[in-house]
Length: 102
Ligand code: FES
Image (cartoon, rainbow, N blue to C red):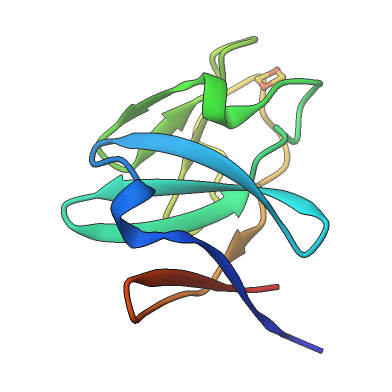
């Protein structure tokens, strides 16, 4: 069942960029876009690469290894070589902290 995990201070989520932290024993990537925070798995669905090492443009995170792109809002794989979407997680802000539902 879903659990809200306190993951990172809201102020530590960079605007127009990505940061990864461990939450609930997993690596989760947090993205700051237009004042909103989004969360996905940090490991690419295509290979052994971390999305926190990639490049965020608008709502699209580009994997650093083969340049696959995901939409951070819904995890949709947007181009080859990606075949599988990436998991996304609900985010809640409370008392200056970001909680993620895992
Ligand atoms: Fe991410 Fe290949 S490992 S696109």
